[in-house]
Length: 118
Image 1 (cartoon, rainbow, N blue to C red):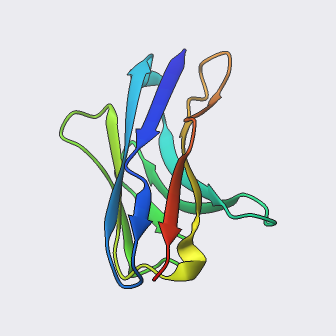
Image 2 (cartoon, rainbow, N blue to C red):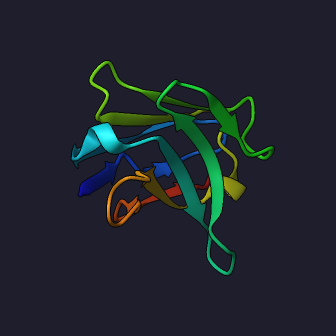
């Protein structure tokens, strides 16, 4: 099993920065990829960024060049550095882990609210 706890959300002005964190515990060696999703009111959940165990990364076009996903030196931690934030970035952000050799395979954090507003 893999357990995820995400944190770091809050209120920030447009153009500001915020760093989200995710702590993974349990069968962390089974994790192939970790992701950040977000869901804004009235919209479907969308994939924002992904990073594999080999540190390959991908980003949604809407955040490319502004967000950076990374793993900590302790490989059970995940970060999302968000810069040049826009009001449209406002959403609940969720950490997600893909562990294909576990019984659940997909694990989710509880979500952390990011609000970008003047």
